[in-house]
Image 1 (cartoon, rainbow, N blue to C red):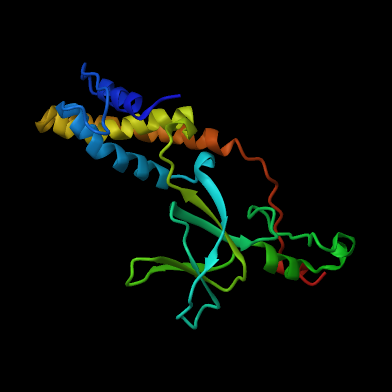
Image 2: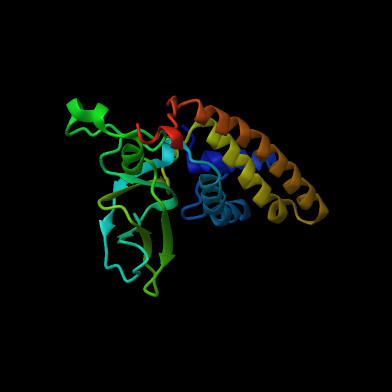
Length: 226
């Protein structure tokens, strides 16, 4: 799998730069390594937020904290590696892709549960996130023992998919074009690399989405009492 240095060298190659760097942490001393050390984390974090990638999706049972907001019943600290929250679900739910919940503790009585009750325990719950004056990010919701599905900050490039690596290299190249090539040439090349990144991102999203196959079951209001 590609390393950080491999991704940086691929980005430089997209720009037609023949330089090959050996380290960006710490930078080896070349201008290219300095630029890569500066822009690589930004490009990576940007791309992680652009899609709910399977390789960076995590679940965590949230730790409750003091709740000073009466509009919500519970307050939880966000996981330290959380980049982008996706959904808040019950700790009994299998996933948050469907709407029906089968209680695992009483499977023999599952057919007696109305869809409305089931959906209330199963579907992703409303939430909001705020930052306290102390700098702590807090998630507010009405769900007890809440589980958060979220995008995590992934530093290990061996976890990246192949298409993510290529997309990231083009995104990084678009950021490097200005300082490496400079002037109008740098601006034009940055635009070209951004366009290439958009094309690769579409392919990466498509392939990533194909790694999940779940039948979503919707409950409409007129059936909720059955």
